[in-house]
Length: 470
Image (cartoon, rainbow, N blue to C red; front, top):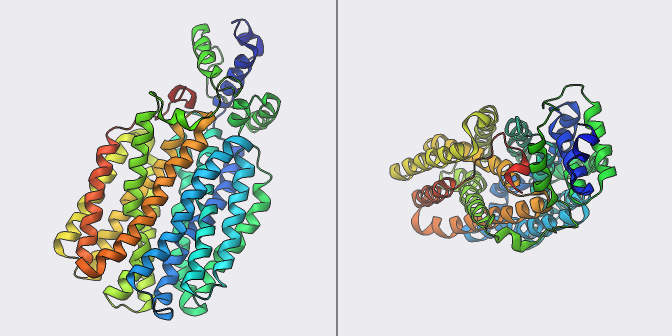
């Protein structure tokens, strides 16, 4: 669209320029330029996922080496997630102030250095402290990355594009599972932390060269810098997705909505998350994050230890069975990526909670008496729930405007950290008192809470971000 097509409307110069630039973002389909940014950002997310699960595959060794009780195991797992709460909130706030790219490179640096430091701890207390600091980096990286990738995307096909990017997270978990199952019995528990930390430092050199989010630049009134990024996107293809002859009324409405995106007219505020427009959305996603990750990370972090201590399987077999869970999860996320734009965010989440809950309830009813019942039912339930944990990284940035997208997403993901810290600790408390069947019953009840919250979701499929969240 040419500048004079907007200028004739008599709107404010700033809002007119913002509308023009955002229109140009929506006018370019997904290209190699988008894929390059997705791969680089995804590489960081991959190793963050790897680091997040690495402890689970070191624990079967550490349990005997350090004589850990179930309660101490739960606290050790919870420490990393406690740090992630701080990271998600702080770096979500920082990303609104200084930008997505500098914030996320800082988080990746913290997580990678601390992963290496984990290998040199000699006690549960020391490992707990280092995992807490590492969690601060892990907690900040993923929500900012989600906001960044969403802001590069156009409306059409955004779900498929984003979830294929988010597939890197379950692949990171899968890699941690497969590599951990191979190297921990051979090279020791320290090796899993080294394997996750060093590549993360390498990725930093690529991340610092990523362009800043053009939508964030527009929201800050940095139109020249934003236009430079958009020109590179446009130069990557001659194809356009929109009709350039947009009606006058549509442009006027768009300019009116986009005026609020300029930082000089409305600044990001925590209070706006609870304004009449966003209050219901905020509370809904908080419950969704908490319920989904209470189940998913409660299962995933404990499965290797379950197989080793409850069913007394050999170390190698315990780790390999646990790794199957993440194989199923990666496959389920691929299916989600292919179908989510057809089915819709809301219906997918509702179905995920129902199916996962039914599988966990069945496992509780039969008493989880054999390891194979856990392999089949718990792993399948985790795989199904894993699609919603990924979906939420797509959905949450969609329901907030650019001025508070990273902040809103960061605060929402802090609930996943709280749930992920709470679930392993509760498992460690309940397991010796009520048995393993009670654990799966607890997870099944939690899915009902998630289902109710999913019914309140706003459908965002194929809608422009600025139309969803004024």
